[in-house]
Length: 218
Image 1 (cartoon, rainbow, N blue to C red):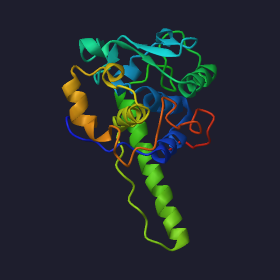
Image 2: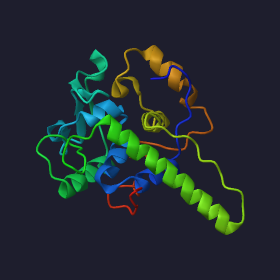
Image 3: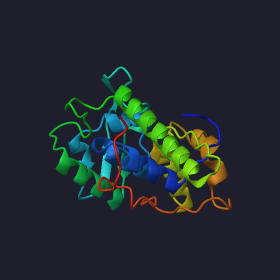
Image 4: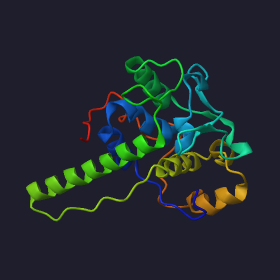
């Protein structure tokens, strides 16, 4: 986690990334943006970690970049995160299409989704979005816009900004080791700032679930 102020991505940017990701991990974008989980925590989720009735996700472990499973980043990272229907509906749709008895997210070959594959798909989607902008600019006879370099961890910032806009405390939900870290990163987003327009745990992501249209980057 960066100990500096951040600028969260917009709803439109998150939705665009979700639409562009391949179907087998599209729900992962919705989950990250609607829960604030770290990517390693998401990759370490088992189906049993999601309580659909209660609307919570239990963070018990993380998948390391090596592919191995380890404990959460800190003691306070082991937590229960409340999520909205946007997330649970996306995960239910995901599991209906890709049933699993153990790991929540798997690769198309059936193995657990790992960091390397995730990073490849993420970067592929970013390139596809820029290519689409370049093509649109060419058709419209204008100069293409360079899209912001959004990284996976920005979805955690997106979620935090939504909670803050709704008046919630983010420290416990994000699992930071101390309140100081939270303040260093998000103090500028607390009530009074003009750029906060999102609210609540739904995060405004209603249109980017697994049923949304999108194509695979190949």
